Image (cartoon, rainbow, N blue to C red; front, side, top):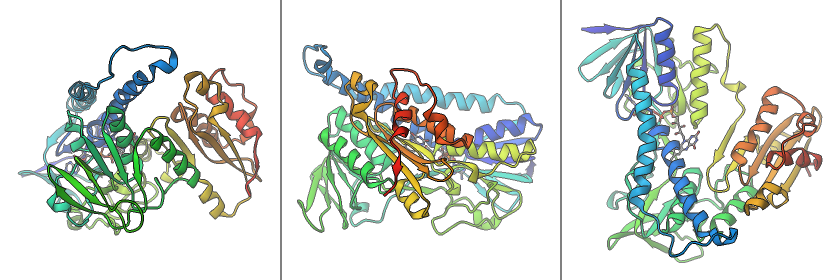
Amino acid sequence: MTEKYDAIVIGTGQSGPALAVRLANAGRKTAIIERKLFGGTCVNVGCIPTKTLIASARAAHVARHGADFGVAIDGNITVDMMRVKARKDAVVRQSNEGVTKWLRNTPNLTVLEGHARLEGPRTVRVNERLLEAAEIFLNVGGRASVPDMPGITKVGYLTNSSMMEIDFLPGHLIIIGGSYIGLEFAQMYRRFGSRVTVVEMGPRLIAREDEEVSAAIQKILEGEGIEIRLNAKCITVAKRGNGVAAGVSCEGGPPQVTGSHLLLAVGRVPNTNDLGLEKAGVTTDARGYIVVDDELRANVPGIWALGDANGRGAFTHTSYNDYEIVASNLLDGGHRRVTDRIPAYALYIDPPLGRAGMTEREVRASGRKALAAKMMMSRVGRARERGETQGFMSILVDAENKLILGAALLGIEADEAIHSILDVMYAGAPYTVIQQAVHIHPTVTELIPTLLAGLKPLE
Ligand SMILES: Cc1cc2nc3c(=O)[nH]c(=O)nc-3n(C[C@H](O)[C@H](O)[C@H](O)COP(=O)(O)OP(=O)(O)OC[C@H]3O[C@@H](n4cnc5c(N)ncnc54)[C@H](O)[C@@H]3O)c2cc1C
């Protein structure tokens, strides 16, 4: 027998739960379905656990550098990986249980566990149950991509998900992929005490960023003893004793890196391959992302796709914003659109990279006249006081209308400081507003007006 609902939400990532609760509270009889862990990637195997582990890694790093601050620690600094994992598990559990209870305690909302598949544009099957609704919302997220590299089926490898089960110190962690996720794990495990090698196919780390950002990050990581192999165009993997050997060289450097463990961090794929999209007639692009319009509607009326699976964002805040867009347009008569969103994110190495808007490369490609400014973090009082002067702040402004085009802040507290720039961008105000603002001393943000005072034409 078909169970009738007004709305069905598949997936409990960063948009599904908020949307399901909002719909149920608005009087729509709603079902939400999760096949694995409530809260999805961010809560269980993404942002929250990694940032919790990064906090442990930073504690070890600060302890090792205690003498620089006049703090003497007798004896060796050791990291108890079982306690590190237990701390991470406790933080994750709190969020996971929070989402679960929130959903289960919401009136008018039915919570189902199991893998959901569309059977048509209005019907969803979960185990033996067939559900029907006029409105279906897909928040199915993504998973680590496992590339088809030679030898991969014959070696054991880790992904961001299985890394969460580690309660020991890998002797030598080889990380394939020198981008956001790979670099966070690289610094984290180096600080825990592992030898770490990052193997990147491209000529530089995080190719999406400007070259000077990539170069500065490489310097920070190499400064902590992380080995980085770039231009590894023909990566192969093979078992080597109890560990793994990665063939990395087409050109210079030793042809092989031998390590104890292998982590794949080479991108994400959307969870759309086993969702029955074809039965409902929902279109995906060549990489499997659900094609949506500016209000996140799929090509089939009554179906929306939110979060990573629509390819319009790859972050918790973009997924949550997808919920805000859909809820506003559906329930509040709003006209919010994805294209109103300014790209913004952080890379949580230490010190972090905070990014907003366009890169310098994008600004140049746009052909507009721009002004640019850069300041080293060594000029920032807060950074000097904390003994963490690595990195720089850079900003780009439209020379004609004075609007801020983009910024890259790499340095202590940059993930917070970037918001003062981002909010001025959202306000549509000229950079002079922030330049004339009086910020609090001593902070990182107080130097942003000084940074802006140094604007010069982008050569
Ligand atoms: C290691 C790592 C670190 C990250 N760090 C950050 C960070 O610091 N900041 C940030 O903004 N973002 C970060 N991200 C990205 C962030 O986790 C995601 O962008 C965010 O979770 C949004 O995901 P989502 O809402 O699309 O769905 P997800 O969180 O991926 O959740 C989707 C849910 O749908 C379920 N599901 C899938 N298919 C089905 C089905 N057929 N039936 C039933 N259930 C289904 C899944 O089990 C899952 O629970 C990180 C990601 C990783 C991997």
